[in-house]
Structures are given as structure tokens and as C-alpha cells.
Length: 508
Image (cartoon, rainbow, N blue to C red; front, top):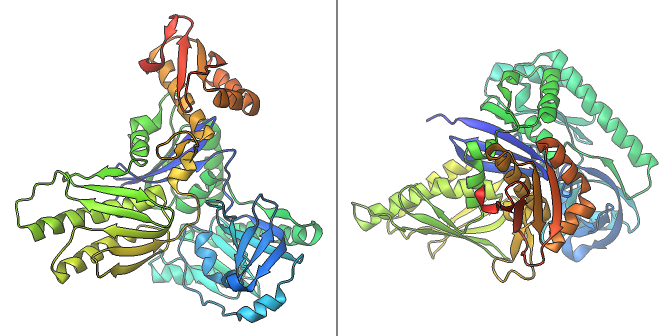
């Protein structure tokens, strides 16, 4: 069965959300809010604060609250390029550098040029590398390297040969150049134009790194929505839906400059049509926060976050098999392989992962499960390593962590919840509130509302996000007042209609 992949971009005052949907199932979700911009790909002129040989790492001040973490392994290691692009490329050799030499070359207060490869997480600063790369739409320029790579996703050997010849003309001496999947079928003029852009960007980075005082941001990569279009809008995407006219025009203009073959697949959705509702995306997002995930057979997964690892337990649940125990267990495990792989992508879980499949007696059946799981993991762009089944029947694996997982992106720590320890972040609360108002406007003609909120959230909107109300008023042609209600808990609101003279919160 061929995969029907679509991209949905939902824009709101609280930020943009980008959903990747395969066969109507949500597989990936990217969130871009004004308060949490993506750092991966950004380049900084930093200052070395500390060198710790015992940790085989240095700490670098790049101007953020927490110093960046620079492992010795990320000095002269081009393997990290996979983190800076959603694309695949030919394999490159790893440069081996003696740790002792690194220690002697790194001096406290020295300036150093670094690029972020992992977002800050759980009280840890961003992870950086000294191997700089400049991503373009069609290629990636890699200073201080000497190789040429062509995306592995381009299968036609004649096309690879053609692209390689063009790339060889463009590649400056002493630089690496990687041709991306989207370049397939495009002529030399398009490739030259894109090269000129990345080369101009690199010269600007060079200039700023020489003339600016550290710490200083010398390069900022695209916002998340633009990155997704640049890196994921490939030939296997059937449609791209956008509910914001400004973003729609911006993306159309960008694709026209590239002479992109799929520009007609970009479609503007009227703002009064809430695309995350009509395509069942919002409901799937809510389910992604639940510990229990049901499958079609009646079996389910139980997903538990811990400080050290993520644990996934496969349970038979309501499944009623008609065969023997071994065959029934095998059927449940095979079904769960697909769902586990999807949940890892959707929740963007990184680090150590332990999966407790239902016990199987036959080694041949365990091999079937392992093979099926690996097959579904191939769709995942994040690097994963599987150790296989342990003596206790547990499957252990690691998955590359680049950014915050979905739970920590959507929610923040709460000192008073006595539950999960997490509540909706203030940015996500804005999205929830705007979504409610959009739905209300499609049902009622009321134009005057009073929104009652918890004091913290009311003060956040009225003092730090004054433009939020202004934009709501303009976009929905309504008069909206924000008032404090001390009886409301965080993440809860009450909305009063002046026209109906009653609480209308539950009428949407």
C-alpha cells in the first residue's frame, strides 16, 4: 500500500504548528512559538568558559542562559551533519582527533565558532559542534571539509552522475558540498543560484565571526515552518495545506524561486475552516499525551516517561485471538511494531528506550518482530540504534535526540498539579483559547465576549502578549475583554457572552 503523505500548517497568534500526516495518521508534529524558537542550525561566535578533560568536553558561552556543551567528539566530526538537515546524504568519513591534542588546543576565554546540533533540554545547555554547515534549499555547504555527497534518496544513477558533474563545478576547493533530494531533475541554473545563496551566507558568517565580539549569533537558520518546507516538501508529499494567507504567499514565492515541481500542491485553506479539526489532527495531538495508546485489534501500548529512559509496555488488552497463545502474541507484537515506531516519531522521543513486547517462546518469532520493527523505523529520520532482545525479553534501543520531545514542547512543569507534573505551556494556552474563539464564531454571531482566566495567565496575556488580544479582535471582528478569576485553575478559562448574558464556555 502506497503512503499518502500530507503537510498541514496551522497558524495562530500563539505560533505555528506543522503536522505531517501519513494515510490520515499523524506521524510528526513541529511547533514554532515566539518564545521557543528552534536553535538547531544556528551558528555562534562563542567563548570557551571551561575545559574538562575528565568529561572529554568543553563549555562555551554563546549568549544563552546555559553554556553550550561541546564534546571533544564534535570537533572535526562531520557525522553531525545529519542533525542539521532532514535529508540523507552519502556517507562521509569521520576524522579522528586525539583527545589530548584537543585538550591542549582549547584555552579558556578563547573565541570559537560553533553550530547548535541539539536543543537545550532538562536543565542542560544546547549541544554544539565546530563542524559548520550552511544548508540551502538544494544543497548543504560544508566549510573546512573536502568531499561531495549526493542524497541517497536519489536512486537514478544517471541523475546522480549529472548532479555530481554540476556539483564538482560549483564546489570550491577545500569545501564540502552535499546535493539534497529536492535537487533531482533541476537544471544547472537552479543549482548555481542556490549555491550563490549559501556561499553568500557563508561569507557573511565569516565576516561576522571576525568583526563581532563574542558571544554573538552570526547565523540564524529558517523558522520551523520554513525548515519543514525546505527539507520535507519532497515528491512523496501529495498536498500542503496552509490556513494563513501571508505564510501561503511566502511559501509560494519561495517555491517559485526554486522552480519547485510541486508548487501546485500548495493550497490555501480559508481561515474559518479549522484544518486541524476537519482532518482529525487536533484529536490525535491530544491522544499523543496519553500514556495508553489503543490499537485496532484491541491491544494497547503503555508509554511511561522516566528520568533515565522511556519504557513502552505492549499489552494484549481487549484482543481476543482465535489461535494458540504464541500465534496471538506474535500478531499483537507485529501490530505494535508499527505503532511504537509512529509514537517515537510523533512524540519525538530521544535517548534510551526499552520496549517490553509480549513474551515469545520461539526465537524465529522474536526475529520476525525485530525485522518488522526495523522496517517501520526506516521511515524515521532520527538515527536509531537497536541492541536486540535482552535475556529478559526486553528490546533495548536508543533514538537520536535533537529537540525537546512533544510533551515538553507543549507543556511545562507545574509545582501544584500533584499529577503528571506538567501543564499546558502559556503559548499552548493561547492556541487553545484562539481555537475556542474560532469555533465559537462559526456557531454564533456574538461579537462581545469576556474571557476569565487564572491570574498568572491573565497577566501574561495583558502584559507580555498585548498583541494577542489585538490580533484576536482584528482577525475575528470581536470585542474581547480579559479579566481575572481567582477561582479558576491554570489551563482553565470561562467565557461570558454579553449578548446572551450567560456563560458559554461549554457551548463550543
